[in-house]
Amino acid sequence: EVIQNAPSDLVWFDDIEEASKAVMEGDIVFALDLSRNRLHELPEELLQFQDLQFLLLNRNKLESLPSWLSQLTQLKAIVLDHNRFYDFPEALLDMPNLEQLSIGENFLRGIPLDIDHIANLQYLSLWGNVLASFPASLGDLQNLKVLDLLHNEMTANEQDMLRTLLPEVQINMSQPCNC
Image (cartoon, rainbow, N blue to C red):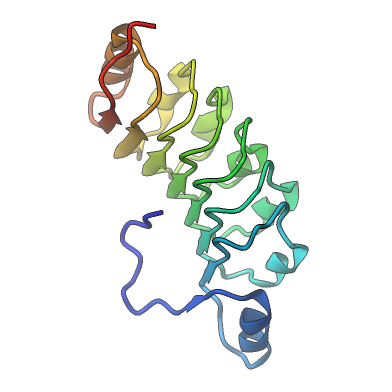
């Protein structure tokens, strides 16, 4: 639930109606916090916030993301922790400007081969999932600085492979399992 390097003077809206009112008054909405709203799906009203850069969706009941989310081309950071994702949301792969993605404490089983389509990704947090495989395309994320894989059951071999694949990246991992 951490957004790295967000401006300290950033105005956060925690209600879509309030943010919509601000847009109608000529303000620009850069940050929206829809955490803890029991959302099962994203409201399409989000599309009116074309300047949105920071989106918090943690602690909801989301299982997937709509493809239209990729129309929010200015999005730099999205937090999806504590939801119900079993599969990596495909819509995120069409967001090349995304710099920070946190999708921890879900039920993700894998990372898509196309993860490198998120070309500007610097911070990727996948803690607390059930990841079983790690594609070599992670090594193609040229801007990646931090990869958080804490609380995923990984063997020592998997951990060594990731360290070799991503020598310049800070990788956070729990103790290897004997699984």
